[in-house]
Image 1: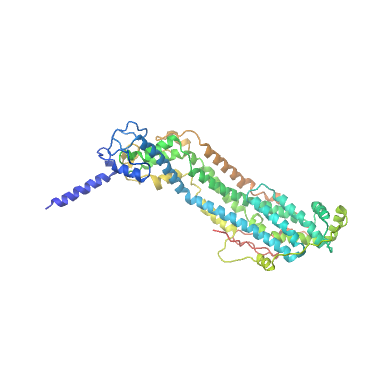
Image 2: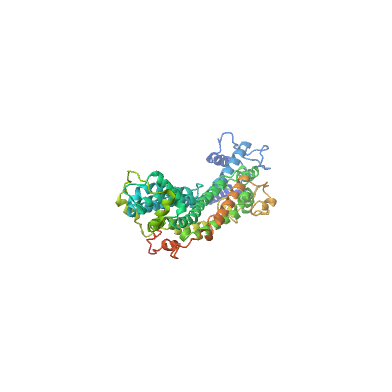
Length: 522
């Protein structure tokens, strides 16, 4: 009567014995489980794989005194699989960080494009509403200016001073023709060119062009550098996601992850200390990125903190049309004096029988273009930048702790469980555990690390360079852009810009200043 329960107990003990990672090496009778996993991983055909353990004299890494379920061909396939596994784990561990940076890089770029287009619309609308007679002629200059703004922000090597000067050079003949010395017909092309060439000597717009150059210089460059830095961040992650591992590393990974299979220990995981030694050895060069990655994030944070007021691209571009209006008004007020100066340089006006038509833009679109939405929940550039930096700061130690993260989260056995030490399943790993970085690997008991990786060295050099841009060259010192006093003793800058608080936006100052309420695309 008691025979049934006894048999069931014996059967359960047998199952536990079979499933126990430390109990399936010495008395192994079949390689069926190894064959199944080999096929499931798509490592090759099952045909030709050992069905029962046998000697493996030709094995290079997974050597053992015991009979083995592996052949030399299987060992080669396992080595490829081990490399693919570690790359997959690397990519998984960095996926959230990569998505954070790439999503924000795309969002900021799209927002800058929208911002530039909006500023162009404001300026075109100014001419259509206030200086209608010269609007059509000014349209090409306005479009060219903001095209150049976009080219500069997105990386083209052009000078903001040059394109700002070019805009005001082209504007002066229009102001002269329609406001200072208007006639029934337009001035000739030759006379217009003479006035254009004389603009910088006559200085009809006072300090406005210089103010615009200062604001453009100190607001566009940080935004350009910010975008460049984000794109470099993506490049760093792509580089480390697709590392070319050394032969020593490949062998160590094979031994750690797949050599247990040769002894049918398919469920075993490496001991934590063993895993750390192998992965820290394989990622020794990557760990060298750590101080530079910390500096990169710290520099982005510092740059973000400096972008406000006239250092803020959003504030500067959305209020550019106000400075243009001040420039035209200043020339109009001083028209008589300017007309005399033009006559001295270019002679009396030479006119043609044609007359330029006025603004042809749709007025409903013009008025719509000047409207600024202020829906709740829309973010300014400053608030989105702050949110991004706060999220990025969480990844400051990413490269310093990468090896540990891979072992703890993915590869190694949990504390207290039997684990693989490279030769057998044991209770704990007894060898010394080395630190991170190349220097620490001299005492690594599991693998030798030889020299530095030129690809990693190159990415470190790029990080050093962008850190220098972020810290030194991206925000020119304020004294370089000192604004000159206007004749009345008040600065034009005070009249039309003012400072912006990063979180409160730009309040009106009586000049029609535009608040920063641009929507950021998620």
